[in-house]
Length: 353
Ligand SMILES: NC(=O)c1ccc[n+]([C@@H]2O[C@H](COP(=O)([O-])OP(=O)(O)OC[C@H]3O[C@@H](n4cnc5c(N)ncnc54)[C@H](O)[C@@H]3O)[C@@H](O)[C@H]2O)c1
Image 1 (tube, rainbow, N blue to C red):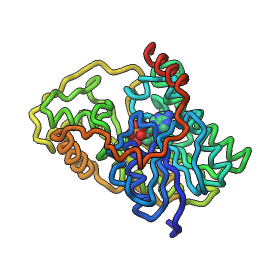
Image 2 (image 1 turned 45 degrees about the horizontal axis):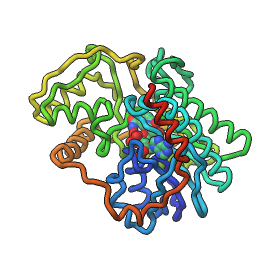
Image 3 (image 1 turned 90 degrees about the vertical axis):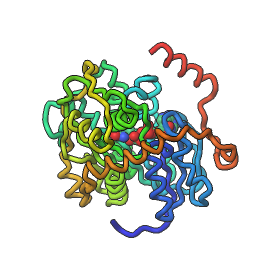
């Protein structure tokens, strides 16, 4: 990766799982980072260590509204969006708006400041894939009317916007299709395989398997993903992607459960439940394009990544939640909150869903 000087970087969704690790890394590299997040699934404790850093600013804001960021901007990582099914399905219309309006507002900010902008897209754009593994050229198999469509179609529309902004206005865009990522700071109640299994195992509760557990996933450790995102962001303007970023090692969900049981020494048993609607049967990225264009490869073995994730959750499970601190008011810039009327409308919609 070329050596770059101090940059002004906006990370939307920077208080979330991936975003907070990204903020850590960018601040440590000497960049000035503005994190914009509405704390829908993000947590203040993820960014608390950064709050007193002179190169870090937290803006409590919503990407469904235009982004009000002062000063120069060189890079925008657009990560704001709930990523796990229970969270994005809780307010599906809000999710579509976050995907589509969030992308639009990130692109508008890039257009007005001359910044590069990277979209955190997803393997979900492939839906329940008919080909395996999935290369970037595969157009996907998404059920447009199912319960995952708010996320899948929202992310697909965001990709379309990114490439239209490039064609229409020459905005330097980058699109990463992220496959299942795991690591410390995942939410324990988000229904994702690894966090679910680890927390259940640590509590000696039954491990929830859907179907017969033979469906496959491939899991990328968060540090590996960050390397890919950064390499993509700092690649030449001609390099746009979309690029799959994920770990091609494919494992069945049942194998993961066994690995977690072994590493935690848990007494949990396996409990089988019906498969949810539109649950993908197989997921595995084809990563040759990212390897060739970016020189990127995931390096952290699943066993090692699982160990640090288990260590993180072991501490969390044993520690009560810390309330949001009083110092927040000094550290936080309140911006572009949706007007109260709109908020009410959104929660009314969520209540009907
Ligand atoms: N984790 C994965 O395995 C994975 C896989 C594919 C794609 N992605 C994408 O990567 C990004 C980050 O995912 P994550 O796993 O860190 O999820 P996360 O839920 O932990 O983080 C998302 C962040 O976005 C914030 N957010 C949500 N809606 C917002 C809005 N309207 N305005 C401002 N902030 C908002 C949340 O509060 C949270 O901090 C998402 O865009 C997700 O779609 C993640």
